[in-house]
Length: 321
Image (cartoon, rainbow, N blue to C red; front, side):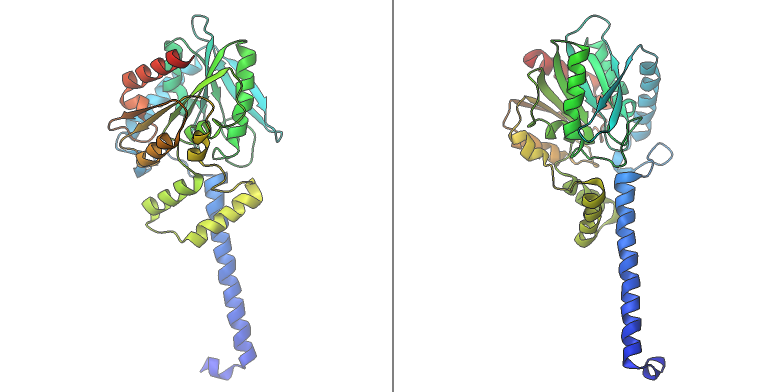
């Protein structure tokens, strides 16, 4: 009855207004998707676990926190680097108990920090006689930056961390180690202009591309997310953060790697699925090794089987340093 009483032009105006409101709401929803992925991701911890992190996540977090307390008590040197776009990134440098010419530059994962992902690994590296440079990515830890770089931006920052390591240990040998987003970052920097001091890369559970990872997580966590929605989220990423989801492909990078790569992945990884590790390993044309940690969830290789990880890392460093 109401519609019949309205003039055709009024109905058209109402339809346009409703459509505009719906489109605005959709655009806002996509922006919030961008915001909670790139700017302020939800906090994940023992009290707010992500089911994709595995059944042993609580024990893993407890171990990580205990090792972080131990590591923070050790003597360290603050390190700052300035990125090519003017951001100041901050980290900590730990010298091995006995003088060492091998330094491992450590790249943490998404929505974490240097101690969050490298306290257990860092202590292992120090115990085995290597210097450790803990790096905090842009928009993580005490580092500057408005947006998470997902490795696309961070891969270029690795060159600055390498420069810092060379100054800290002149004429030393450097290995770049990364876990999760840091693993993808390490792979994606493998084809860049690394200095001769960089002898190899140790990557743990890195993804193929940001788009692959977002698509995978969307399906696992929500069942279905329209591709148009992801494209709108990527629109905001390009406009505000300055990069796209497919801009850096770990598989393509390792095809042109200038250094050997050790790939590590847990067989029970449901956050960055193990098949992504296999894809990156298969694509790599440089000298390579693959170590699968049976039963390990995401980023939990050292927690699940520290001995196997240490043996693999030590053998890799000994072989290529």
